[in-house]
Length: 426
Ligand code: PLP
Figure 1: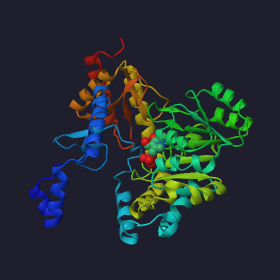
Figure 2: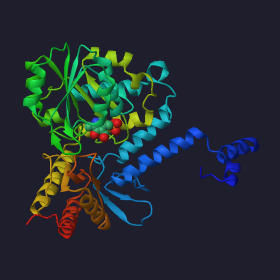
Figure 3: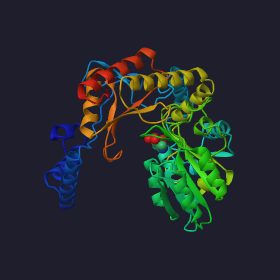
Figure 4: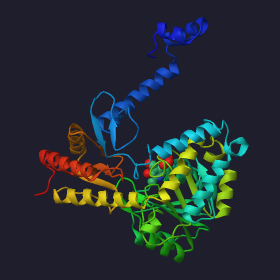
């Protein structure tokens, strides 16, 4: 509603400007009712202090970023840019080549006329990377999860999901008609109880490989044993592991020393691998073929754009030769976690670059993040309903692109702000 008539005239012809002017003069009843309802909901979000403030970057994604409204450069500890590939010159150049050779986009879904050689190439590369039979690309991992459960499970089947699984798994499960069970976070005993009492035809256990708010790792060995004992399948969302977790970056399976543990892997290309966008499901070829035929986010949404696909292909090359970057990420993770503990702060999770600094109450977490920002370090506070009540935290994410000095600066700033707001343990 903000466009004034003079501005409208710059964009529309005379009769369009008149129509839009009239449209703005008289509020339609339906819209008026909607505004009232939404204003209440927005007030409620503000009251609950769960309002999301988006900071606008004026620079590429990197370890140092610029934020609109400030001349300063901020050290960035809140992106999923685990290997620092988001603005890597070779990745950017590959995207440029992809754009030049294949165009901006396909103007089509995959099965009509939206599949190019690079889409097939990327699917094959991902199958090889994970050692799986076949792979299907999606626009995002959210789409991969949204399109998995409804496609493969019927009311005769059952799905068993960790309570802390990602929202896209929760939503994907909501869409399917299978019998639905949730087990407490990483609780193998409770999961076994549920599996033992199920008479479903296909039983699917689904878990995040690494849980994004907590930095905890799924107990893959135990999950695999239960899957075998109860003739179930295991699906792992490895978005926070693909490319960097485990010795060669094969993800949670490799980290846990049980390659091949998952029957199905869903993952993203929007975090460690390129950081651009895209997701995929890899696994048995019959499943992937079924997904190509019935999975709705695949069938009814445009093919991933060529520059994005080309960036992912180049990133996979880099990932496969990135032993040094992974080691740097491990070193940074260890230095940060040890530094914070030595400073008397509590860091949750396993030895993963997601390092949540636990605070407790939401206002304190906001105070901590604000204090860090004042010291030039960009981190974000999370509180209920994103995390449980009383579990407010500032989530830190390390990158291979951080220098040891960057990590030390963050540790020192956390210690200083932590003391100031009284969350440092004696
Ligand atoms: N799964 C998990 C565990 C995630 O953390 C995320 C991203 O936040 C997604 C899926 C969604 O990935 P994408 O950004 O590719 O949709």
